[in-house]
Image: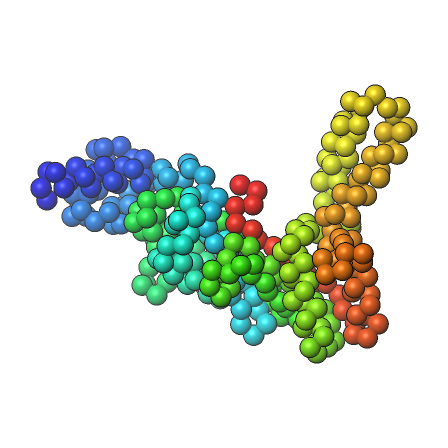
Length: 289
């Protein structure tokens, strides 16, 4: 290999892995200039434990949903820029990954070790994509909802392609019926979750530590007003109830009819068809990063 090409390859490998010049040069020479094989070789030697690009923030990307026989998976794949998220190769990788997520019931460890169509594991293909595109790309999270005597739904907001977008929702309902009315309601609830971003179904499903922390924040804010401690306690209870109302699905105002709560709509339907919200999952690209 000409020395100029060798130096270019070594430079590229160093940028991807963060490994020193000498080790990168040896790897490039041993693999005849193959970047992917060089990364694999360095990883096997325990030299390249993490990709250098992994230090950057990847808050763009896609949320992909896959469904079959009332089983649903949802997975978030992140990139650094929206430009890459619209790259055809990134989308193709995400689509295949979404199908694998369903097959592996959303279990990340199994997803990463699964062979893709090119006979390489997901982990290997991910490194190759990072090398080719030149951005940090991560498979952030995955979840799964099985049929298990439930009626399941999905919703993708402003899809780039079918079941691919920036915001996705899975919803599981327990019901004895699956008529058109129930199917429409399920779709509407999934849309409501996308728009209103609840973090739990009801108050009892909220993390106690979260409520405790929220109350502490509210009290500290009220202390600065100079009000009496008894008044502060009374106001804090009201504010905490408001927090619960705004963040639990059943207690939120129904987006289709804001004067009613979601639980009111469920109760109305339950008079004709018994229905219960079992679970929901909401992924928005980059949320929390």
